[in-house]
Length: 240
Image (cartoon, rainbow, N blue to C red; front, side):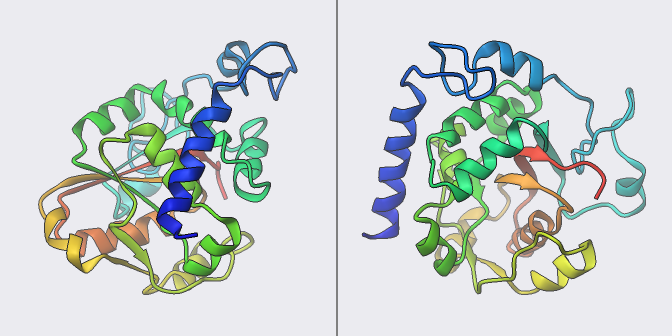
């Protein structure tokens, strides 16, 4: 099946699964959606985060010390939750257990974040972190594309970014190793490049750890003339 049709199928299945009443995956209340409102309120409390890298920072701090000393390529970063229970398990189910129904549920966490709502409203395009053809073939769908479509279907562009080659798994690598791993890994689709010049874009991913992937993409977009780049992620790991 063509990857575009396959992604469309998974988006339809994701939407369908999201609206079937079931047990809450966290507290097992019935009937509920995948995560009931009580568990969302309990495990997705608003947190003050650095505006450039989304790490938790004490109020009223807006930018962490690392970003002040070494500004990232990203102009802004928004995360819905910290990477931990129960969201880490949900993201793993989405990515590794072939359960695309989690995409819509996880995107609702971002819809609750005022910073994400503002970023989406201001964006011209909502892009996703691309998978290599090999990884896409293995998984059958791009989880970041599903989340991007659930966030802003009218602005989602799944074809603007290309991954030029498969890279070793980022997990277990430190920041410098991740940066080396991602060297020359991304490019902007040539037929779309001119369309993005001067635009404000969002890049969606499921998890941000060191920020190496998203900053590598930001540098690529900046070289293509994109004016403003915001990363929007479901979960942010804390100090790595």
